[in-house]
Length: 487
Image (cartoon, rainbow, N blue to C red):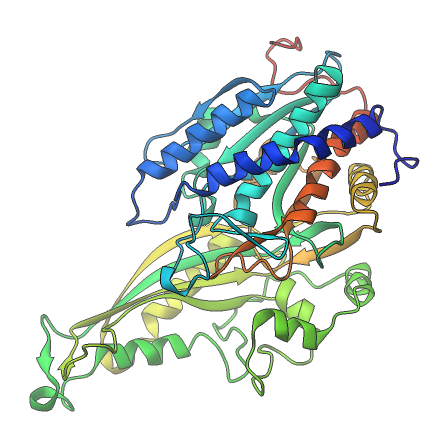
């Protein structure tokens, strides 16, 4: 790892400490991965609380002061900790990750149990390995390295590890009212995105937004014999299928009238960045496991990365209908689906959610009763990757990975970011990093973490804190009532 381009003091020592401590960090990560902290409705809330407490304990062990749970009514707890620099005038950096995970899906389809971490071919498999418990340990490793080398980090450092990111952070507004003052910072580092390729350090400068809704189609008060009543009585399962089909056109692009009218056009520089990435469509198809002969969806006049990062996209992420196995000749009384739509940069999530719900309500076939329940609404996010804090982060990550930094977008969403930035101020730098890669399969079967990338991300964040001490300037510490540092 080259450190001659860095302003960070103790760079070689930090690298040595992280390297020597990775076995311990691995034990900590595997301990977290064994906790099934699924925040989705219908799952046991106790493991999510246990996971939050485990993160609090971890932060305390790795150098954080005031490590504790932060809570609001009805929400899974978040973990929080602080580590203050020796210099009271040092800038403040907030490190974000989340400890909740997606449901495992069909557990029998996993190559190894989803909550029993297993290493194969340099990758650690398990639900949450990359999304985002690996990110939690990146923050812990950075704190641990600075505590070991210098006794304290070079910037005031706060860590917030959320507990409901995977369900769209529905209690975020209440959380910020209750705890937002404590989170104030001069810069935000979010370790919850992916590297462009394995072994390639990446800063993500663009995230799509997200809205979702549940739709229920009802025809009768009870199930009916399909031979005795089928024909005159409409089938709500078929009706739901017809309704869902109206959300997209024949190419798979969003077909809700007016839905994308407020999307922001790409700038010339954004188009240049996409072209600079040398997208390999065949590699993308392999990574996605797309069957031969199935074309990429969306408007073919737009580059695939534009469709992935800068255009809205519909997905039916849940469907309640009779299982094929054991099915009987019965007309169901009701069918239900959950629809998720990713939003393009510039789109207003409240407007988008309203358009989605209104479209579902007015497009009911055959006069069937349709009830729509609005869900999450998270705004897109765009960052100027050429601002000084991003350049500083890029130096640290390039040194850690021994590779030039790449700027990329992401089709995913992180609801926490937009309201936090609005609370901090629009000029607050937000650095989006992560430990995932195209083979990670986040949210899918056999999610995994490339261990070498994880190690380099830990080194990169430790170096990043040092670079921030020089780049963010001698701003007054944020979130301290009197300007004094409280230990």
